[in-house]
Length: 151
Image 1 (cartoon, rainbow, N blue to C red):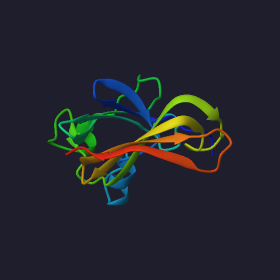
Image 2 (image 1 turned 90 degrees about the vertical axis):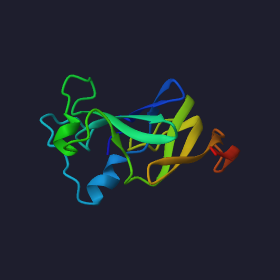
Image 3 (image 1 turned 60 degrees about the vertical axis):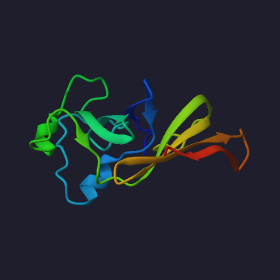
Image 4 (image 1 turned 30 degrees about the vertical axis):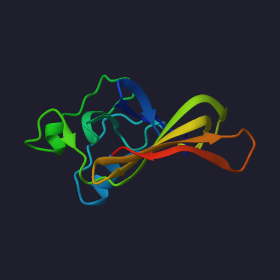
């Protein structure tokens, strides 16, 4: 599989790219997957989500079937009656946000290694904790720093 386009995330006033796909958990529960008119090997899932964390809550705020932003998918199609943002109550897991310089490129999924990863622990759509994983070039292990709670 080709390296994939990451989901967009707005967190603490900054725009970031995630190496996590929270909407896939919704589809696994039986949610309707959007049909994609275009095929891009770097976007096998057929959509690109835009997310934000506001008040420690994770929201889906946009969908696009193109990495270039020119083929929007109305949220109303997947979530009737939710308006312009959807609380991600279905998602529990860790959002990985690669940061810094790319150390190792891997032509598959989100397997490339960056200097560090911001990790955001989400439980039923609510941010419960954050930490930073520092990745050493060529080392098999990573160091965890700043593990903490948002409460």
